[in-house]
Image (tube, rainbow, N blue to C red; front, side, top):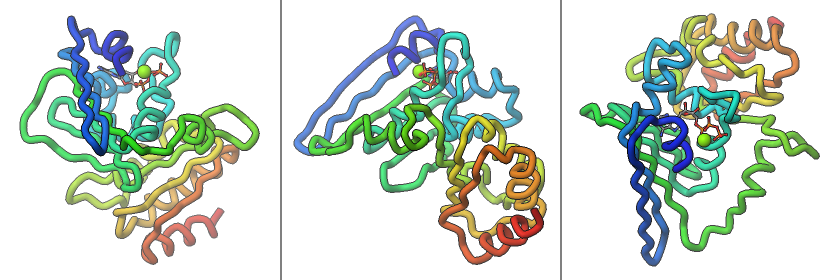
Amino acid sequence: MVNNAIDHSGSPDVIVSMRRNALFTTAAVVDHGEGIFLKIQKALGLYDTREAILELAKGKLTTDPENHTGEGIFFSSRVFDLFDIRSGALHFMHDAGLSDVLIERPKDAAGTLVIMRVDNDSARTTQEVFDTFAAPEEYTFAKTIVPVKLAQYEGEKLVSRSQARRLTMRFERFQTVILDFDGVAEIGQAFADEVLRVFQNAHPNTKLIPTHMTPAVENMVERATSGR
Ligand SMILES: Nc1ncnc2c1ncn2[C@@H]1O[C@H](COP(=O)(O)OP(=O)(O)OP(=O)(O)O)[C@@H](O)[C@H]1O
Ligand SMILES: [Mg+2]
């Protein structure tokens, strides 16, 4: 994360702090640069800054492919028990055991703040985290878990083909994409058709695996996949 501040933020300084209590250890890395979400939004030409969070959650996202692979935040967020990025008005939190959330912050703050917390008695190893997302017998980054909820903004429903394309953007870089529908009550027919039939037919080498579906979501997914 310190290297991220150095290579990507354009900040003149970076502040690192660490605190340890009886239960856990928390580290924070702060810079006063461009801001991570804004930087990603600009580089990818995203319509909404919130889409930057969805892209980070997918993994393999880098704005500097010559020098980077886009694995830093994806894997760091899963090694820690709590991983938190705040920048501008947005706040991305990954809590082990809970699903990813997007919280909107009231006011714009400059730069990027990354907070990482690990339980002092954590038994998690970096190797097991890498193995979770690798293809069997390989060391590649082949699999990802995408919280579909991040494509759904407050007060919106996932109904359209354009929302679906936002979700499936860059999916073809993975062999397996687990679609985690946690927090999504229902989806529309066109959305489901675009993801599970149109995208899937166009990219047969990427396997889509939906999980945590409500009966309403499952019904739409079944309709779309039976039409393939
Ligand atoms: N502190 C920051 N300020 C501005 N942008 C950032 C910052 N940290 C990360 N980013 C943006 O987020 C992207 C993803 O970061 P991540 O660490 O996951 O990948 P990477 O640094 O590009 O590649 P790798 O970590 O594998 O070398 C970066 O390419 C950059 O665009
Ligand atoms: Mg990095």
